[in-house]
Length: 276
Length: 290
Image (cartoon, each protein chain N blue to C red):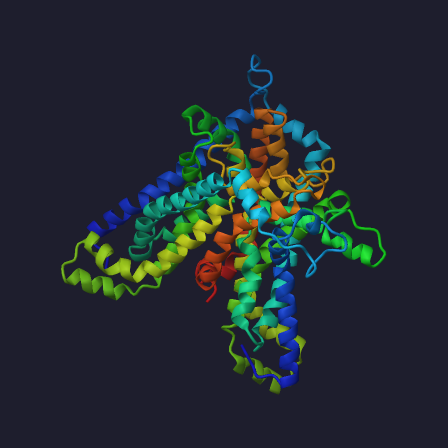
């Protein structure tokens, strides 16, 4: 809808847009700045900006003192593991619904999404007990399973949206050439669907990485990922502001960078194709 | 062109996810329903048995429950209003031919990638803290008393934090929709003498209906279960001032170790989610067709 503006108005709107964007971004920026300050500098009044004492000490200390590497590794395993498992289950389903739709396909999709409306707390008790019974408590495999199931509807919806945009004629042509069902999926469909699968994967990794209910309820120490670690990080009297900020930055930076590279596809994918 | 065999194959391919989701939904829900009618406290393991609706009545008779119900709806409603209204305004602003649009998008989307506990602890400590927070520094700079955000306005503070997290999502979806609006239509309206407000009301807003629907639908799904932000900042307090239904149930299960009550709360939460979903679908469903 972009329209030409007079130079003066262009300058003004640009300034306004940058001001608003920086305001939204500011908490993240302030956290990153604080993470490089010494503790006294981090809580100094008035707040120090350019005059602060800068240091890398906080990162070194968080890395050494806490079990940061383990939390980080747990986050990676849980986010990537649940996503890959979800994709393995969702790809055939989304493929079938997109290319061999039945009368009930739309209803089925809506039903799948509706399972996400069920509040997690409602099933917390049974899951807790099942986990204890099966010895899944505080294990990575348990969280992989739960997060996979939690995000499965989203994965299927997104894949379905992407697959629907692949023209069906190409499949018919390959079928004429005698391709089998699996041959069709592997040689024809997969190359065309890869961008969609990639952005589904990214979004799901982000959702799983940032999950902060099941990770808190179902873990204690061994399998706790970064979201559980940060949730329990207390900062009494502001003595640990810089270290808290460093730990926070380390928790979000991998995902922030991943997200920045893929933001366009992510936004499109999250609308389930409803907004072009 | 689907043959008999390909249709069968298709069913086989859909089956695993349907079966998994069915189990994921039905097994825990059935167990929750069962426990909700049982006396089941981890602290008194010897006593068991059916208790009828006692667990449910405990909720309905507790003033905290009605507060929690109100807080849950206020959180969902408040965040929806804030993110949609601000989202439209910011999207309209960024949609202008401003310099550095790509960089702007990157700045605006950042909060979406910040995990809830981190978002909550940044706001709690670096901004809202009465001694060391940036807000208190600003207030003192003006010679005013610092505002005790989490103590005096806990629910508003939580709504603010969650709105910050979801604003990027709303803004970018609305921006995507805005960019598909043709400028000819707007120029024609301008020629016909339509002012900025008329153009917004009769051309831009109708064009955004679908995007707004998507924003409301997706956000509601996530907002009904908000947990990490409250867990990190207020722990539902002071008192029960910022306790939502999910957090109240969590407290019953973890702190009071009353499985029966927590289960009853879970069933109430499911019913609430269904009511919300029903009204959402009725009110918005027709915007999504086509």
